[in-house]
Image 1 (spheres, rainbow, N blue to C red):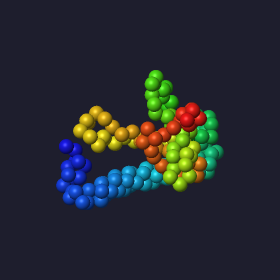
Image 2 (cartoon, rainbow, N blue to C red):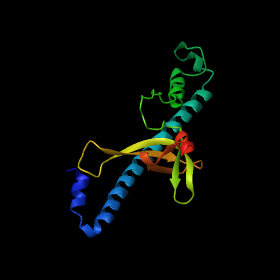
Image 3 (tube, one colour):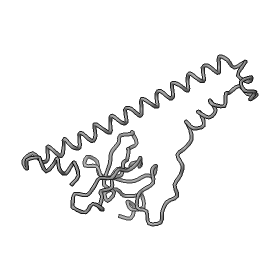
Image 4 (cartoon, one colour):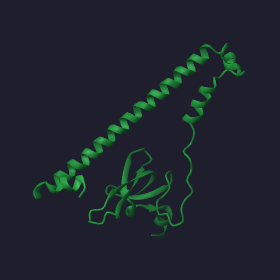
Length: 166
């Protein structure tokens, strides 16, 4: 029995939904904290890159003399720029894969407006409700045209081809 199941089993039956809500909220808060730290680190790196650019711009008359490289940009600055803007490595799709690729367009049903086109931004997986530890619930993270995030179970997501055939 995992920690979450144990915590939920300790919860009185009349408060089970509330306990589940607290568990989901705790997970959300933990993930939000990690995202905030990552955003702060990215801001710190962008600030460091800006400092490097200002230093090299100020000292550009002597920059070509550093290590005899013969150009006005230090190799470390070139390296930082290249890795800051490098795209993520593409992974070839696997035959039979049912996950829509990140960046692809899919359709999800919204209670307020019906089916809406969204862009896939990622995935996450939760264990099953049942006893089989090998079964998992797969969710697809999406965002709408305004950038509002959302997520749906994989079974509730339609690709453009599926949407037009239904």
